[in-house]
Length: 101
Image 1 (cartoon, one colour):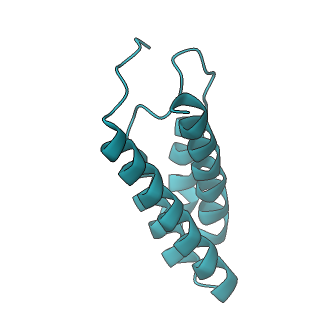
Image 2 (spheres, helix red, strand yellow):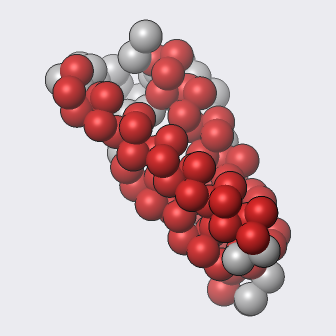
Image 3 (tube, helix red, strand yellow):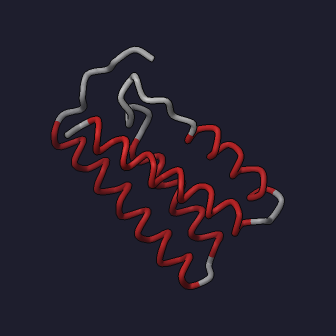
């Protein structure tokens, strides 16, 4: 991947705040046993971060994991899907924080 310029500070703060809020919502839904809502909240967090969340040199397989999470979601196995997606969002948030420190 080619390096892209960092987003404006306000944009970066908004992106990470939205992603963290979505992850927190997903974790609340998970605790309540609402796995579909957890999965959906996680995907909102992924969207909030956008595509430039990792350093260009980072080996990142979260996209593959998110793609794989979609299969159980389609099959109604939302517990597996939510768990996989939430783990990917946690990893992306950590990568984002490392990139834009």
